Amino acid sequence: MLVLIIGVVVLLNFRQKPSASVLNLTIWGTDEGRVFKDLTLPYTSGSSKSKVNYVQIDPSQYKTKLLAALAAGTGPDIFEIGNRDLEQWQNVLAPLPAVNAAQFNLISLENDYPSVVEQDFTTDGQIYALPFSVDTLAMIYNKDIFDSAGIAFPPKTWDDFQKDVSQLRILNPQGQITRAGAAIGGSGKSIANSSDIIFLLMMQNGTQMIASDGSTANFATGGASAGENPGLDAFNFYLQFANAASPYYTWNDSMGDAVSNFIQGKTAILFGYKSMLGEIKDKAPFLNMGVAAMPQPTGATIFVNYPKYLGLAVPRTGQVAQAWDFVLKLAATEDGESTYAADTGAPPALRSLIAANMGDPVLSIFASQALTARSWRETDAAQIDGIMDQAIQSVENGSADSTRAIQQAQAAVNAIQL
Image (cartoon, rainbow, N blue to C red; front, side, top):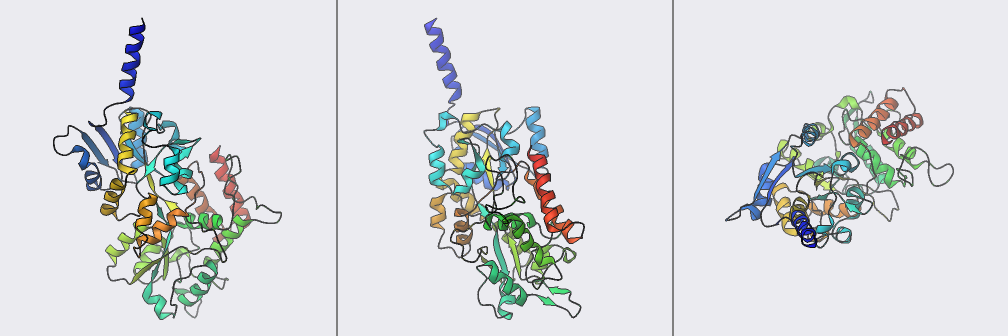
């Protein structure tokens, strides 16, 4: 009997610790196939019997196809989740198992990655995903327009930003915008990152986005002291740029897509991610474009920036230990991240590579901002973006004032948080 028990234990241990030298894994993602081909080549080339099958999925169909595959039991061994999406996927994910703790653990995560990765991809001390990159919102600006307006440097604070917007915009005699100082103030109809900008402004302004126990959204409820409402103040700050009665009026949704306006030289400042730069350069290769850090509140000593990135995660079904072992090889090593960065141009996630890129005139902006990126735990990022978009539109079409709109938004978010 003792021999039998020992044999079963040995067999179970063997199953829990598959050989890392021979792989047979399927990965789903949204990057081009060549990216993962280069990443996995060291493990599948030569005499290796390993097989890593990468499937590129259209981002617009990714969630639907992944849910269907997981439900049918035909899902991948590794797939990508957004940094705002852990709550959606946690029930189907396997956290980093104890068998991999010798390679990587929570202390490793805290030491090797910016704080936002722990905020986004851990729960109750369990690690659920690891990123190749951490992208953040930055200020993209037209250097020629700045020079023509006599502005030597991009604004570092929101106070300076307001002043510059007044100089950069052009209004016709009827008060209509013929050149926008910045794409800010509108809804998702014209500004793809509208909710991201609002959430950033709220957090920069000291808004407690969720209750202390994490159960409910709190961004419209009030501040730490009586009479304070930093979330509403941030919302109003954003909206002023689309208010024709404001001295800083510079945008409205009727102007159309913000990126197209920027490419055409009709907008001086655009807020976007590093991933957006390639699209702009492809469509406007001769545009004299600059990139600067996001403005911060005047006098701020602790900067806050806003992230958007993906992490590799492992489903509960399948080869959990082996899949996690491979995730660590790809995402938690300088070799893996360097290969990914070389193919995509994405800013790094590892602190060591962030430090190594501080001399790059563009990449250093995104790399340094990753260190001060902050998030808040959301149940469904896509739904919450839609809710905030509706709040913006309700103010701008006159159906609600800003106080009512943000309170309705908070109630709607809490309805899906439950």
